Length: 352
Image (cartoon, rainbow, N blue to C red; front, side, top):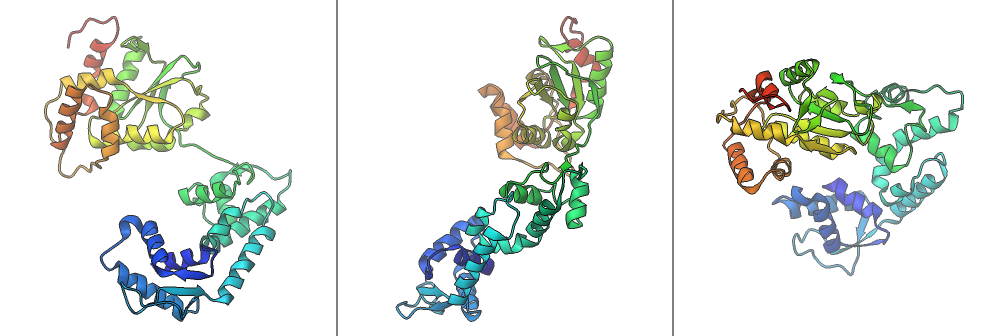
C-alpha cells in the first residue's frame, strides 16, 4: 500500500495533503483489494513516508479519526517537490522527439520504474539510420533489452503505445504463429470455419475433398484448425495469408465452458467479425447425452463469455443450455462425427 500512497502523493500538484482525500484516492485505486486492516496499513504507510521525509505534519491538522497515530493534514517536503520538478524537466528534454512523454508527467513513480527501458528506446531512435535492417520484434527486443519477449508482452506493448512509438519506429516486424488450414479464402464474399478440435477438422476436410463443403446454404472455402486456445495466439496469421478483412468467419467448438470462452476471447481480441456457427451447435444440443465433465478436466467459468454465447439462442434453449452447463455437463464436437456432418450438408439426404 505504501507504494500506492507515495505514487498518489507524487502525482498530486498541491503541496498540502488532506488525509481523508488521500484515503479516498487509495481506496479507489485498490478497489477490490481493500481489506479489513486497510486503515492500519494506510496509517503505517503515512508514518513510513513521514519518517522518510516525503511528507511532514501541519500544525493545523488534527488526529485522524481512523487511527490517531497520524494527522489529518500534511505537506510535501520541499526537497521532494524540487525532485519532481527535475523529473518533469527531464521528461521534456532528455528523450527523442518521437516519444510522447507527457503521460508520465502525471505518474512520476511509473516514470522512475520505466526509465531504464525508455532510455534504451530513446538511444535507439537517436542512433538509427535509413540503412538499419528490419528484424523481428523478438529479435529487436533481445537486442535492446536482453529480453526477447518484452516488446511483444502486454507490458511492453502498453509502454510503447503510451509513448506512441511503433514497431515501425523500432525497425522491426511482428511474426505470427501459423495454424493448420485447408483451402484459402481469397475473396471477401467467401467463408471460413474455425474448428476447435483436430478430429472434427479432419472430418470436415475429408468431406471437402469429396466435394461436400456447404451447410445451411453457406459454402466454406477455408477450414482452420484452432487447436484449442492456441487460435487466440495464431489468429492474426489470417493477415499473413492475406485473407480479406471482410471475409465471413464462423467458429465451431465444444459445448463446454472452455470451448465457449475460446470463442469469446477471439471475439474480444479480433477486429474481424466472428460469428458462431449455430447449425452445428443446435445439432450437438439435439444429440446431447448428459455427459459430465471429469473432475480432473480444468474448465474456467466465464460468466460474460457464457452469457454472450447463450444470447445467440432463443429463451427456452438458452435456459436449458445454461442449466446443463451449471450441472457440469458438456457436449464435445466429436458428437457430430463425419457421417453426421455429411448428413447435415446441403443436398445430402439425412441418414444418421
